[in-house]
Length: 97
Image (cartoon, rainbow, N blue to C red):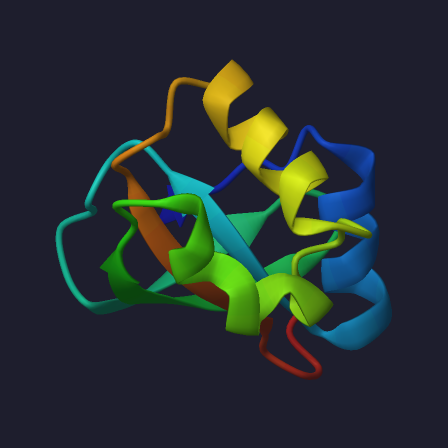
């Protein structure tokens, strides 16, 4: 099983608190829907949502991003070189820690 890292604290905290988070990655992934292991969180589903081409594509997802503003989220995406990357929805599978 593939692993997925969440090194940005606010993003990881969002996943733990809400059971779900939206995250942008530079890679597309092998399939639209898969299972991943997240360290200290457990088994999760990872669903590819869309390709991100501009900051405004993310507006409707900010509430489950872990960030308090779109500008802060976009700045972190830029710092990771993930502009033009892929938006994923990651959800904790209950009872599968």
